[in-house]
Amino acid sequence: MSDAHARRCSAPTTWVRPFGARLRERVVIGLLLACALVSVLTTVGIIWVLLSESFTFFRNVGVASFLFDTEWTPQYAEKHFGIWPLLCGTFLVTVIAAVVGLPTGLLAAVYMSEYAAARTRAILKPVLEILAGIPTVVYGYFALTFITPYIIKPFFHDLLGMRVDIYNAASAGIVVGIMIIPMVSSISEDVLHAVPRSLREGAYALGATRFEVVVRVVIPAALSGILASFVLAIARAIGETMAVTLAAGLKPSLTLNPLRSVETMTAYIVNVSLGDTPAGSIEYQSIYGVALVLFVLTLAANIVANVILARFREVYE
Image (cartoon, rainbow, N blue to C red; front, side, top):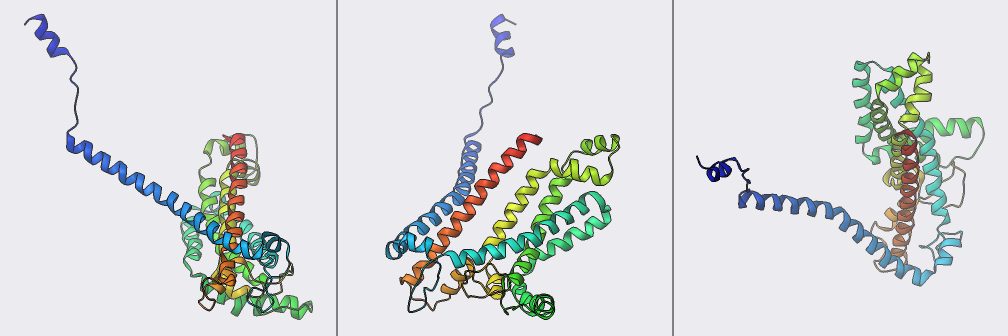
């Protein structure tokens, strides 16, 4: 065999994919890109609608009146568009929900991850996640028919003699706190379970107890994921609608008393969107101003959360 023929036989061959395979790959890439752009375009569309409609609203009302007025009466004869009563109602419900849901969910996650047996964990986790499948309307009626008459009134009204409204922020905050427990417990349990076993074994080798390992090793190592679950749960509490509408009421009040009836931003949007308010009126346009404030608050919370998560990732990675 000649040298030229030997070189041709030993030279590496280049595999060329068929045209059909390349076409299918390009189609798949195009479909994946289209799916990725759906969320981006949806977000851009929402922002555009909020900004355009809110611009019309603020042109008629004024930003100063919206931010500094302390009354919210858009459906009365004497109209006021101060956002603070709605902000106070949203703040009350969110804080109560966070006090109820965040520590309860975290403690449940710690128990399932560090203390419960495998069989117990296999039962408890699905039971907790069932709470996420209950309709929010059911939570609202649960607050009206059980939490207010059997928990809040016997303690605050009968025992302490305090005034308790039928619709109040306390009952709404409690049911929203129950609603966010599955989110906090599920995400936190996953991140706690993902902490390397070597960290636990190293702490046990130094003589630490199980409680010390959990508090000083496992939770700090999983803190970024735990904070992420907290942020998601708080965002859920801020955006909750039907349960809050039924339990907290529709009375915009500038108060920090959780036993009084309040109105949240989401409840007001639902109230105006029922169809009784004429489209294009100033009352109808006000829902876009409220929605814009809600969007800005949620965006600010996510930005702060990302900064905190990046900080703790630098410490524990």
